[in-house]
Picture 1 (cartoon, rainbow, N blue to C red):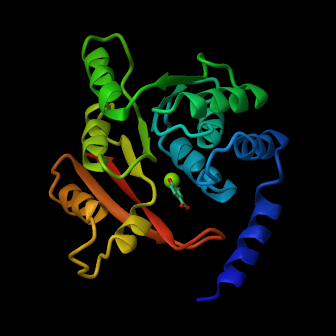
Picture 2 (cartoon, rainbow, N blue to C red):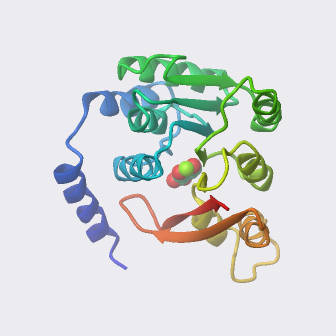
Length: 228
Ligand code: DHB
Ligand code: MG
């Protein structure tokens, strides 16, 4: 594999398909300035998840893991004028940076992006209850980009908060987690990502796929499940 070349390809694609938006650059720069790790999605990935959401006609999007709100900006654009993004973040500092980045991008908080402070496993059951009580709309697209201690539970809740047939649950970084955890039989390492894939495969509620990707950052890939 040629790491330099795939970086060049991504730069070329970025410069021709994704003309620089100052608000996006600001979100990255302001996140770095405030000490957030540089692990947000890339511009190309942002465009891709935003297009996926549009493709499915998503109105209501849920994110687990806001970080600095970079993907929230992309999703807000995808549902602009027809829906809302709800985004869960466990860290108050990250959440404040995200709010700053969103507002700088002209995204209304909380009307267009509602940031919720809390741990995924505390907030998700509340969302399930609110949806069941008719107080909150279910979600068309669930983007899970959070810690790897609870991925199956996030996924399971993701399906529970989904609107129904055709709703998407997307899990970021599954492939990287699989190879970092030793997918080919390193018994000493954690196997959360492999367990997730196996469990999703046995889950009759969804059809699913894992797609491996390369980009400027690294070899990685995501899991995408479509509610049946
Ligand atoms: C990294 C990338 C991610 O998308 C993420 O959610 C966490 C970490 C990384 O590149 O290290
Ligand atoms: Mg990620």
